[in-house]
Image (tube, rainbow, N blue to C red; front, side):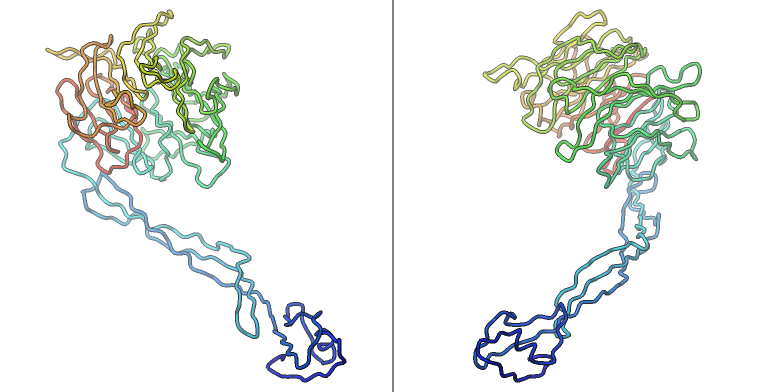
Length: 497
């Protein structure tokens, strides 16, 4: 049976299917199928079926539909929708290998895809502006919401978007001490060799474009020297890097420390390696964090097994406090939070305390706040059982409150201090020695805060914190709290004069 025709063939006993094919004028292509196989010995009245198989290439252009994106914007009224960017479909060329048997398609395999035209997403801007009472404050607040950056200058009604690329990861969001330059990190999507990259933006110039400083893979630390700019107009940035890895947590820390000098125009004029790549002690794969003293004379480091100082001249480490590393039982490591006093004389830190039960020291759930003088003497614990993520913030020296006592120390206190890894936190303020503790936010009975950054206002009268993915400003003296953002997608912020 071939080509819908029956051909009768008579052959001597012992002949094979191949002999039968050769006894006819049938021509087989390499793809044609013969059933039964050619080596089969013939039986009387056996039926042999030849199936014609044809392969050919087809090329088709396929429309790539555009995506629809919604950006929340607090500068337009709630519920108002604006078309920011019309969508446009893309076009893709697809090459198929098609297999047909007896004229019927049996398989279609894609062998090549070429995007001829990328689709352009449709971007809709939805207003989330609500009728808040305007809040005035000193300085500038930068915050990252929906992976874009916003600037609020002096009053909550005076805000504008400054970066709308939709790729800020929120790991680094730092304003220069003079409030001019924003240092930030951007995601490097679909790039296995790069996690993110470090950029600059002049926030004083509405027409400024972000500047790439050509630094990659920043996870734990990048910050301005507090004495930037110098009398020569130069800015200094210190940072530490990691190497991307496919396994959790996604990187291997270098535990290095590098510095760059930035000109007044934002260009990099000098690069310097202060600490070469090193093991970083126990759990060094996670990384090391650093903190400048306000006078920029000292740079403290924090890693899983201790805290100390970096010699800014020769790049050596001086360990000040040895800490029992916390055993997380996971793909992350705990780094002791650290913070300098405003006079640069005291380094506050969270230590891993001794167990109060039968657990091993490395599994202890006790975390206390300690203080270390510049001369090396230890004080504390100032506050006991604060939790492992007890962020510390020291207020500026300039605060004075008529008829009231100035608070100078703010922390995040774990609501469940012996389960602080999963506990929510509350914001507390106190005197510098840990006395006169007062819980100020959120109100009693409300859900606590997630661990994160807290910052005093430049005049020391207010505190900013993230709560339920929105930015809040709290006045500890007047007991007034106000939500600054409302879109529920704020992930990072900074506040400076």
